[in-house]
Image (tube, rainbow, N blue to C red):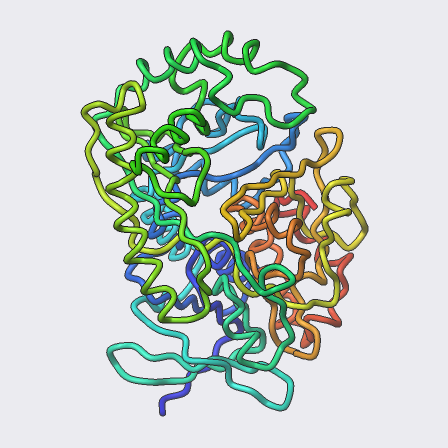
Length: 462
């Protein structure tokens, strides 16, 4: 078996892995990034997520910067993000202060360009088979591609698989889902074309009670007050509602039973929206057979949901399915048990500490096994800190976990799992890994104050 050596190996080319690889390479580490797809971006691109949440707390303060903002800036140059407000549109929904629509095709190009420019070695169309171990130290990974199987040895491994696949396979402890092990719903996103968003907005303004507007109490305005201020379809970029319509459709067997509302978001292409309204319950996203079942059920739901939009949603009468995601939208799977744990109480209280390597501010969003969606909010419009130790698995050396699988309680994970927050974690993971490689530190031994100072100099908010 062929063996190669690098300073850093990043497994997983979603946005946490992309930013981690860029950060590691920029900090002088020989870095290789591995992903099973032919392009980068993960849930943003393959999953058709279509937006970043969120770069701001509810006060409007930017709490995510550095490489993540640079990524948005590069997308703006290519028309893949709106130019207003550095790409971030105000979000009257109120689950976050801003939402950042991103074109997936532009994102694929920007991700690879930024990686290549930083000196990241890309290994696409490759599958991570598991860790290479020396005792309790993760010293590399095994991978397979068209050329066969090989090993990549590294001073630090970054697990950005989203499911903590490497950390779990290495024997690191983890939890999954709720107390009974049940995980949040899985969705299959899709896009609809032929949409008249101006007509839809007129309906919102006439029926504000049917939409989520100003959800966070910090907003301090009624739905009617917020709706009255909406002048253009870009003023309501992330839409959730149609409660009565969903209820009526369910009664006629015209909508699936797993959601009480629909969610969709605008894109940078006029007349095209991304729909988040499928919901598959009771499956385990770390089990292969369950992922197959989710894909099949999700595709069936797409056409049920599309018929609902055509019949019940003004402006969607002529809508058509443009495309569906190449990857399932998995909200929750494994969460490592780390040296520090991000708690629900800390998130709600907006707690910060001198071990933080990033900030979060999105609402604490949990999709229960019943299909019910429950939100908690960060008090006072604030943000919370994400501690360095949440990336460091207990009982393992040589590895950092970047992305939604970091060490966190369930509701806390419902916030920190979103794209802007995991990108901030990615920059911290890549920077820390490069510093560990250069100084022969184990990640758990690295001086957090030194890492935080390096991150500050690189534009991150810690």
